Image 1 (tube, one colour):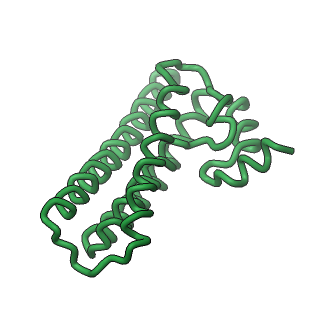
Image 2 (cartoon, one colour):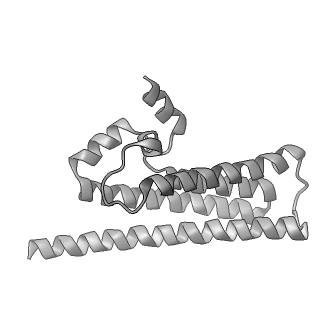
Image 3 (cartoon, rainbow, N blue to C red):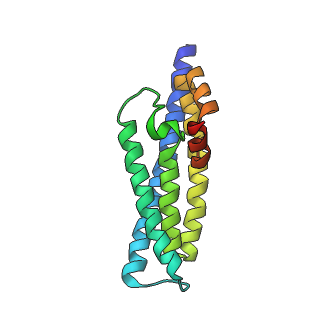
Length: 164
């Protein structure tokens, strides 16, 4: 009976994690659509300077590259991945989503883009906590050690730790 209760709890955690990932995807794709609509229709609410026009798309491209690399290295395995980008940061897909949406926000600099960016950060943090909890249940002490070694979001700290 206790085992059945744990399965229900694990399913609940998985459902919570999926819910936050769905929210992340909605905001990500909503932001991408908004970016292209603003670009196409030229509906900027405030005038942009050249730097944000250049930095925004560069962040979007960098974020997409990080997202693609992360998905490729993760694959469809059910084992804990500790190599490659996952040896530098624990949540590269979340960081990639944040970078992409930051580029979209910089490119558009509208009130709705900034609000969407703030909501996305909230969803990423909550989703990350749910994912960490699920991974702790799934991988146990091995994941605890991984958490001690590898930072969750701090890319620079991960690179510096990897070099030393």
